[in-house]
Image 1: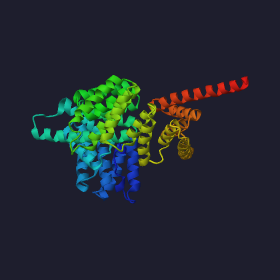
Image 2: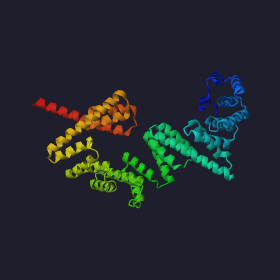
Image 3: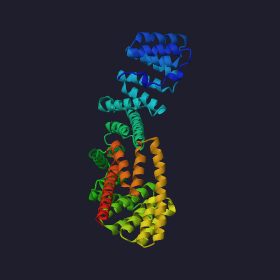
Length: 453
């Protein structure tokens, strides 16, 4: 391990009078001229003995010269001056690390993390130390030391998990992976890390690794609802309907007893509803339409104003030519979201099938108006940031719903170039191509027939 100034936040303590000498000392330190840098920091400390920046920098210099006791002395003094200085804890922790005093190192690094939980360097070094302690250094016979170790270890794991989930939420999957890997190095049977790393791998298109982690999470806890639900959804997305149905059935069975309790949590309700929605989608894909309606109706008993469920049931009714039932559900959606262009368009089609041509025309015009508004906004956004994936997908979807398949195909192709593992894009790309191909052939046949006449 090498000491680096980049790991320290010390420059807030420099005043103008000392700046030139400090900068000269830092330059010497970076160039490896340690004796010269020591002279500069000694010069300042001879004038102002409690200069925090000079003390920390001199401590780093002593460590480079392998004068570790002197480095520790400067770290101790700097903490007497500023007890909440993370850089002082890092300096002392690093010095203890080199001296093989891993328990002391751990204490100091945990204190540095309490002050600044976002220090990646300290998190990484802490993980390395925990591994060393687990392998051969830790005294398990010392009850007090064991309790402190366990507490500090859990704090580190929680911090790593928090960072992993933060990067996952920001869709920075490679960074999230680093934190989950570190947790699983420390604790190979950590359920949360296994679950989230599985989700990260899935988002990166590494499906085999995703299933390995999700399976491992369920080996740790076979009735973990979140993992069962996510694995079921993952199976569904890959067309493994039997396996998906099996996982979702487990979720529903586990939640059945709690469902009608007054104190049921929103999370349980949401998971139960999502499991029912996925089962309904599976049944629809397997052309079991009565089962589809049954699952969606049960979901609506739990969440009667859920727009997604109402839209799905309305769409299923439409597919079954039960147009009045479809219109009833779609009307409920539009009471909750007046400008939903997709629902307006579908209701227009239902009106058309029932022979209500005026109502159909009104809905078609309104849907077109909404889609055009969406397209205008998205096109403006893409002028500012042409490669913004989310906007390209939204605009491609709008074009697709307007049956402008050539333009939809163009947007989805661009997304595919940027994110080749984006499954949503691949699906739309195929659908847009098929729609474009069908439309082109239809126009070709019309022109041929005109020429024949």
